[in-house]
Image (cartoon, rainbow, N blue to C red; front, top):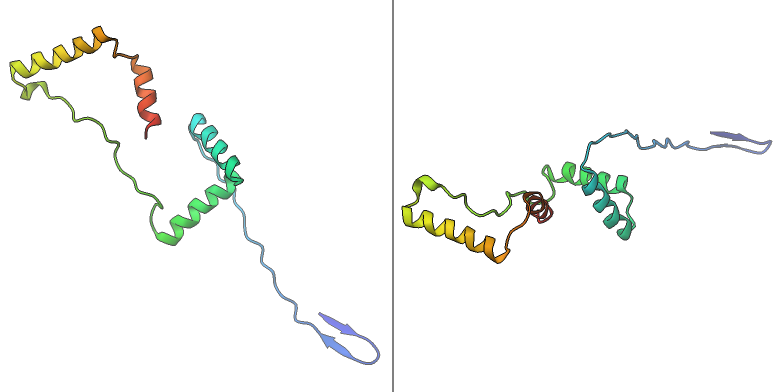
Length: 118
């Protein structure tokens, strides 16, 4: 920039300010997960977009996903083919005992609790 008056000429270096580019990111997410995340972020005072930007920045900085990923700890599967007749009777009896004691729940409830524990 050039500023002139009758006594002097001043040249100012004009700084180029480059604004950060923005991009829209459309995601499909589980509505319940999104709602729970929004509640946590609200308590932290962090907008969802900022949290997503933080996540993407950490991926770029670390060349990895910034948290541990592992399979859920589930009980080992039962393979009836490898069980003796006594072991099979014992497992069946355990199930009957649970049923009689009321230690049962709907499958949808059990799966919901399992997903929430992840």
